[in-house]
Length: 277
Image (cartoon, rainbow, N blue to C red; front, side, top):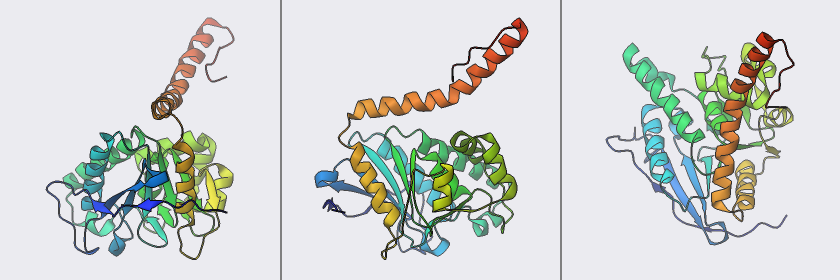
């Protein structure tokens, strides 16, 4: 396959105000790079916390929230691609060591911030793509589910909403987004059983858009995700953004409208006219 040459700009941190890195990664845990040349319009977010396998710690979440807030106002961002700088890992989920040091009140505040982060990713105005070249567990899979599109390495990407070895339940966002993606029955099965899926299995179920064989560099999902982003670039940016809004609002509203129609039809003893049909 002919690979299109793209010009790269250096990674740059968009540091969150009032936050300092834990120092383990030797710098910012969230870095940003805007591609140039034929790939101009693609912006990449690099998650780079190798000491904790990109676990969702306080600094990580703060930096990612601040980064999204800045990029949201940048009209040059046509596609936002999430990738990992830690080989074999996309995002390992919650940072349990950090959470153990928090009071109950602090945990509550952090969980609310984490929920806000997932909502910010889902509501980002431009299309978002998760390039999953490794494990995505718990909150890591929830982050990928918050993206519009997902690409996974066929064998090296392992996904699961429940981190069974840690006894963690999925977040509220995960239990809502997974049924929208897979349907209620299948989502319940995966959550009840705590089953983990390979990239290939996730693709068969429809959890990811593409599953690709891993390469020697360990970035096959990223390469495919970037090619997918390149397909989006020629499309009219306003139309793409409006299309995203229309689809997101439709998937949120249709179940509610159908439920109301079903209740009305039952009361009126008539055949319901569902919007979703």
